[in-house]
Image 1 (cartoon, rainbow, N blue to C red):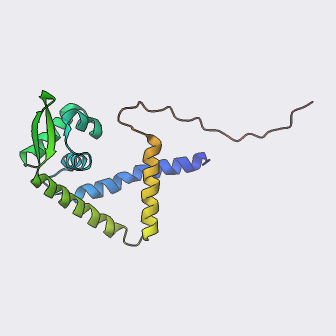
Image 2: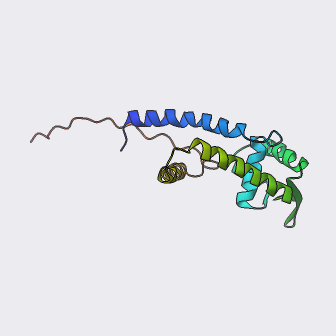
Image 3: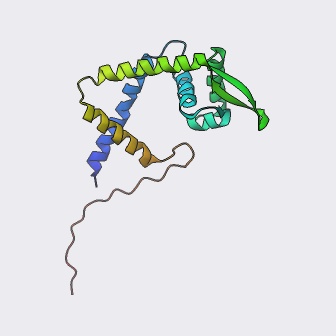
Length: 164
């Protein structure tokens, strides 16, 4: 098991991931901010869905989701159609223009990562993917479950043989 110093360093390194995310955000087209990109990405990954499901996947309030959806719908990247099961609800679906925008986002992201990781080996990139996937899996579904309390830090103690 890793020691406290290692977990502290890991926390520092995870905080630094924000710089990576900011750099990735800078490559987004001006008409497609991060929230819009997230909507397109989730619809591309999970397919058609209700707004409530999208809000859950985004892990944001319904009002924030509505603003993101309005933005992408105004650009013609998604369509909102009545849900056959419940006419009060809407099903969100990528349009051909939305698929094109999603492809453009993917091209930009792939290019940035290829540029920044050009001195990494294929094995190192694969190892990073495996470890990040494992890290994410260790946290489970953060969107719906309350956070688990932190595990107590165990300090090493010196054991003495029991007296008889």
